[in-house]
Image (cartoon, rainbow, N blue to C red):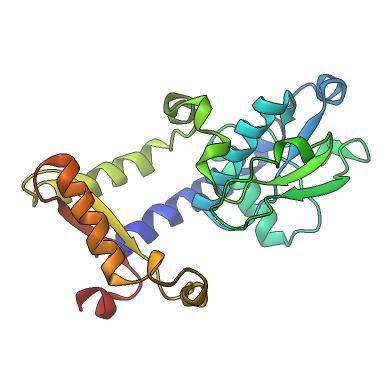
Length: 235
C-alpha cells in the first residue's frame, strides 16, 4: 500500500505538469541579463527526486560562483524533455530551451571527481560560463542556502500535497512516538552493492541508523518502510 501511494503521488505530479505544459513556454526571463552575467545548467536525468536534487545543486553552485542557474538541455529524448518541462512548470521555474538558439549552447560538462554522493571541494574552481554541472547528489553544494529557501521553491500542487498529508497522517495515527521513514531500494540498485557494500544495502546498516535515531530521540522510532523488495525487508 505504501509503495502504491508513493507511485500515485509521482503519477499525479507528472500528470499535473503534462496538462499545463504549454504554460512553461510563456515563463520568460531576461535572456540579455543572463548572457551578461553568465549562466550554468545541469544534466536533467531521472524523475522528480533526481530533478529536484539536480536543481538544488545548481542553485547552490550558481550562488557560490555568481552565475545564473537556467534550465536548458541538449540531446534528450522526447520523454526526458516532457519530464524536464513538467518539473519546471510544477515549481514555476523558467525554461530557456525554445528561445536559446546558439546563445545558450552548452560548451562544457563538469562534474565531481569522486562519484555519486561525494562532495568535491575542487569542483567550484572548474566551473565557467555555459557549463553543464553535475553536483553528484551531494547536499554540501547547496546547504548554505538554507532549508527555508527550498521549502519556498518546492511547493507542490494542492492535489499532491493533500494526498501526501493524508498518506503521512495515516501512518502517524498508527505510531507511538517519533516517525522515521526508511527507503530500501533494491530492484534497480543492486549493481551498487559491490561498490558500497553494507554502507548502502545491508540490513545491518539500517539497524544501526535506527539505533542512532533512538539515541538522538531518547526512544525507539516508529518506522515507515518503503521498498521495492518487501520479502527482503521482512527478513
